[in-house]
Image (cartoon, rainbow, N blue to C red; front, side, top):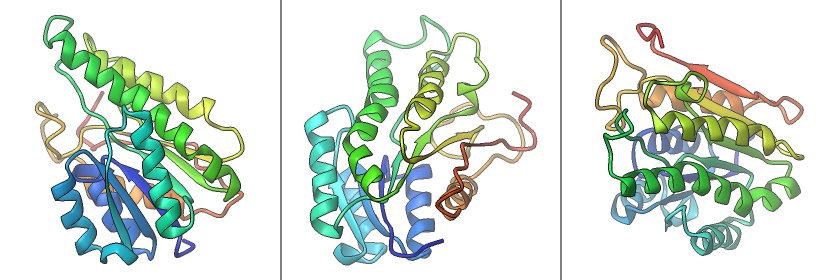
Length: 225
C-alpha cells in the first residue's frame, strides 16, 4: 500500500469506520475523520497521532455545507483527499409499520443522500489525484430482506457505486452481519468483526492504481442470507 495517502472517512467514531481508521493509520496514511459525535472522534484522532496524522471534523453527512467544509479542512490540513470512504449510515427494524416515519426519513437521508453528498464533495479531489472512492453497502443491498426499507437504501448505494465510476476507482463494501451495535438481531454463531471488514477495505485500497476492486462481499460463515 502506498503510504502517506489522505483518507477521509465518514461515520468514523465507532464500528467499521473506527476500525478502518485504525487499520489505515497503521499502514501510514493520514486521516480525516468525520462524524456527528465529536468527543469520540477527537479521542480517536488523538490516539492515532493528533493533528499531524489524524484530523477530527464534526459533520452531519446530510448537510451539504458541512460536507463541503469537511473536504476544505482536509485540503487545508493535508493538501487534498486521495481516498474517501462514505461509511456513515444506520438501519431500521424490518416491517413497514415497525419504525416511525421520522426514523425512516433520517435513515434514507443518511444512507443514500448523505453518501451521494460525500461523493459530490470529494469527486473533484479524487479525479485530480487519481483517487479511490469506497461506499458502505451491505449484503442487504444484494438480497432483499422482507419488510426492510434499509435493504432499499443499500440497493440504492449499490447502484450509486456503479454510477460513480467516472474516472476514479470505486469499491462497494458489502458485509453481512457484523458484531457491532448496528445489528440488534445477528445470526447465531461467530459474526464478522469490524476489524474483519477493515482488513477487506485495506485490501482494496492497497491495490495498484490500474486495479479497481469493484466490490467485496463478505459474510460470517454461519450466515445463509
